[in-house]
Image (cartoon, helix red, strand yellow):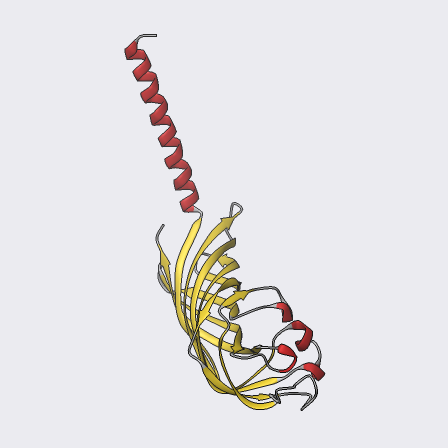
Length: 241
């Protein structure tokens, strides 16, 4: 084969490759839905503003069913909240559940989540998302530790009725039920779009907040958890792909 023919064939092959790659990318991009939710959840003892970036993939020809992932940055602020023993071996029994009473708490978290939703007429979304893992930070707070069993030989330091300092648990892992560790959220939601790119989001948030005491307390426990349910409202923005 001559040099000219070799160059021509090579050039044709490279062009075909990049055209195919571009088409594949275009087809994938057309099946992606990307957006950002900005809003706040609240209840009578606290509130939780959040920023949620998500990316959904249309499943099937109609694209009604969509699944994807997201990143949620959230802050939780609460008042007069009871945190109870978090480890499953204590939380599963009332007789072994102690309480850390917090007059006020604040934590900031960044978590990765998964989502599934139904998209109707490209105007309405109905779905749910669940945080899987992440990190949290926050200042040290003082709470009143109330032991469920009172003084005993197990509580040799007599910590069952004392003020204790604690900070938000740093790592978060969704392990279902009382095995869950850290600060995580789950959400049921609906979106309605007023324009192609802007809409309103309403939802119901299931929040889990966890604090870790600076010292081991009764039965060497240091983790305390509070679960709250809140109404959510916000604005949603679609991002063109």
